[in-house]
Image 1 (cartoon, rainbow, N blue to C red):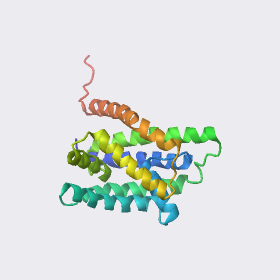
Image 2: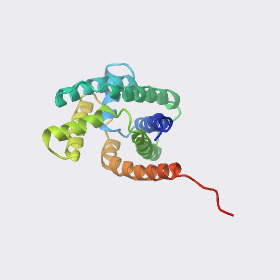
Image 3: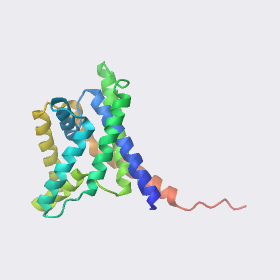
Image 4: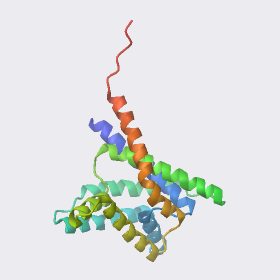
Length: 209
């Protein structure tokens, strides 16, 4: 994969992913445990949701380094910075536009958010560049505990869920659906994007006369 393709997938994937995060936040039905923590911190302490994305990721990077007994992987902070900026931009642009008031419209907003997050994550992960610090956390916990990746993911979700509860983050049915449906939606879009990329990178010859 060329660098141009890699950076295009990286940037566009994060832009799409954060658009989905904006939809889940605006749905008022609950977000992922991590996003719920960010919103709770922004409401109770100050700063923006995107700012807390960067700050918490910075802390997670040092926690990862401590658990793995390695140097901090500061490259992951680049993804946190881009993600944080994009979240704030989307919330600024769509905060007053995407504001559902009825239950049905909130459900539609949440569903759109989950699908867009899955698509954006699939595109971003194809770049295989500067992974999110939370992804590193799952791998490190798996290696340290000797448990499965599902155990690591569940443990991280529980930690963020507890913190989000403490800071009064938006926890609700959307949080449960994010945990349950996030994986299957991501797997669907990963397979779809991979097939599209393979097809796009194959040489196309003109039809013979």
